[in-house]
Length: 423
Image (cartoon, rainbow, N blue to C red; front, side, top):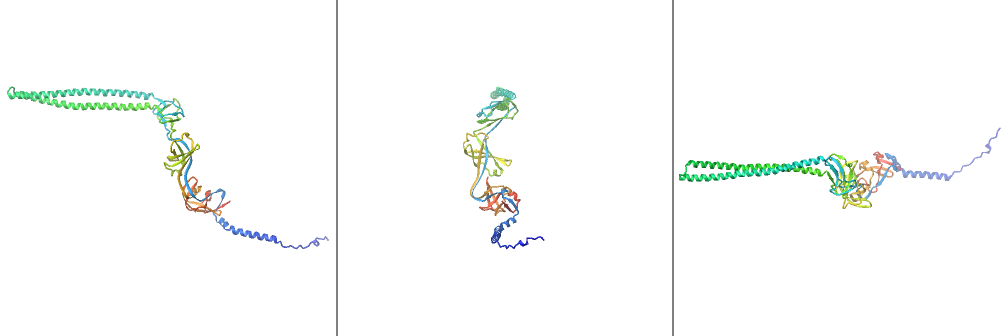
């Protein structure tokens, strides 16, 4: 029989460990305290409609203070006056200048050779000279004709006076019985005939004189009309010498030397460097607040100049509106065409205004609501916004100073009323 180890076994008495028991009791109490502290938050977490990581969001605090509405953008220097010159008539062009040359007003920049126009001017000038001869000849003929009519009138007047004297003699002689009555009657007939001739001569003098005046006037008007045509052709010939309309600098040449161009073809441009402006692009949302005459600042080359809004384009291109500022005072001499400058236009400035940093929540909600963050929960609240600047939005209703709101990333909330924000 094999012996076992039962004879070697002995009962060990286990004594209770008070230290371990106290640790268990302390741990249980701590868990109860934590549950009591975080029970409201845990409840809110479970009551949220969604949960979003805070790293995907941007937050800002509502503040009260000064509110400045301005537009800041980059602009480029452009010439307020930059005319483009065109060919007034077709022909071969000879350029007298090069791109970048300084020019004076009235200086010939290019000439156009147009034999057709030159010949046409010579033909019309010859026609004008012929019309002038006709006009002068009509004046001479009118004087001759008027002289003849005056002569006939004078002769008729003399004949009438002679007939009156003859009648008087015959009547006196008849009274003395020296002549028969037949001679008196004949003298009366001669007087009547002389009066009729006198009447016609007087009428012819007046009527023919008017006719001669009309003929002269007609030839005069025809000559003057021809002179106007010659004057217009002379202007066109003079315009074959393309002259600079302003003092400035030659910009771009659109043709090559001795190129043959058609009428109204672009030849070159001239830049007036004495009247420079700054052109900038303004977002459409701010363009409606711009107005002609608004003040601004233009910065560049280490200098700052005052400017005034001089023009606003009525057209929106790619969500932007072009605006121009002119320098308030003398144009700086050191600026160049297309040079880049910084532009700032002040739209509005007020104190003690409730504002918050601008974010995408304005566009996403249309400014009708915002998410206020309290204890890790973003709650949707209706708001009303006012004016906007580059970096701030005016709060009219729905928020108070010190409120912390989500300004970016609310598109991930999908319109939920309550969203839990996790770390």
